Image (cartoon, rainbow, N blue to C red; front, top):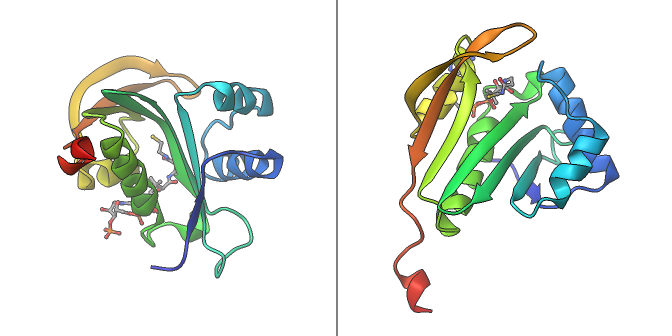
Length: 161
Ligand SMILES: CC(C)(COP(=O)(O)OP(=O)(O)OC[C@H]1O[C@@H](n2cnc3c(N)ncnc32)[C@H](O)[C@@H]1OP(=O)(O)O)[C@@H](O)C(=O)NCCC(=O)NCCS
């Protein structure tokens, strides 16, 4: 795996990077105001994936909210030219490891029922389908598949130190 680095906080150029990835991946890009609001919420986590040997700009992002013992993944994306190189899995693994260490026991998400690449990614990382939410998405209208993943929590020694 190439070197990568996560940014926990978002400066203006990072916010622009997130929006750029969202547009390029066909997701609805959050406005700068929405990103600003998200940043100010203490439960929000935004991680950008940098692969300096490949690109000067972030190649992927994941946006989620942590309120132990639960968390929710809102969105994630990898630039089209960098798909199927393991970067989506890298972002998801990093997020889930952080959630587990934070004492989260279950992580939820919603995904369009037709989004087979994302469903395959989530399934590969331990998410299982819970239910369908009819008409959850607009533009175009579509049902959501609700998925969740049980997490093991922090290692026992974390409670001893
Ligand atoms: C979903 C997404 C983030 C996956 O990113 P990625 O970097 O391509 O994923 P990875 O390379 O880490 O793939 C990991 C595994 O996910 C599954 N997967 C990913 N893309 C897939 C595809 N197009 N078809 C089938 N399985 C796929 C495979 O099991 C894959 O493992 P493999 O390559 O060894 O077979 C990316 O396709 C994307 O940005 N899509 C558009 C935005 C989006 O739909 N976001 C999710 C919103 S809920």
